[in-house]
Image (cartoon, rainbow, N blue to C red):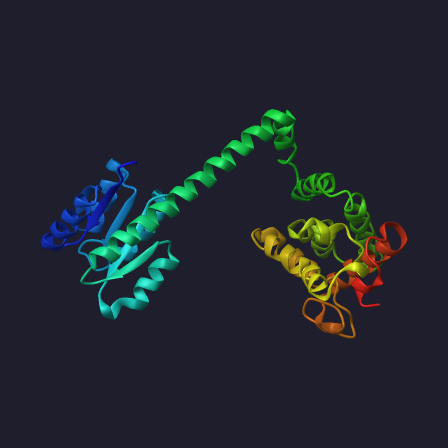
Length: 311
């Protein structure tokens, strides 16, 4: 069993002594600090797995210290210790990345339980990070094309999106060709409507990515005929535009396109989804992509019946 190090932080020596003694009895290596400045110094020097930190401290309070800890040592778990009147502050600390908080005076059995939970969480995060790194290495070993792909991704943002679509099409044969056709149709519609280029690009990107949310759906829902789905399954399928927007919202460049994707299956009479928007409430770009998508579904792909569009 590994021996974990815990940094106990409090400006009252008696508190650090008692807590430190308890943790030593439980098999932990114990470090001590009296303020936020010392915490950062100890973290830099010893890299403890866990920090048990008082919120109120001299020189640098616990909240500010937590911010710097999570920036410089993101894998280190932090449990805050708070007085009764500081619950809102403690909750704010959790929003900043603290694993949890304990009330003063510290209940030792609860401390031991929370420390183990925090360290278990840390172990899972590390395993996930290792898995992702190993997965990246395996992909690089098997494809032999990643380095070339990375070079191409340095081009324009639109080119990068198109390359992402190529990977998506390879992953899901039902998507193959559809996204590019809808993007081409959407662009042609924008040109015919004399839309400014700055407005055309978000529409084209939305068209290229409008089905990206389907990758989160179970395979059955992606391949079975729409008419064979249950009501619950239909409701889940109709969430794919929301899923797509959530994915795209991580990138500032795709914020507008994400709004378009979310609403491209709305209808002017309010019978569309996911929000039941009507007429002018539907973004104009979403109407463009919706028309192009419906046309391609009916003329080229026919993946779903008209039920998906409310017809």
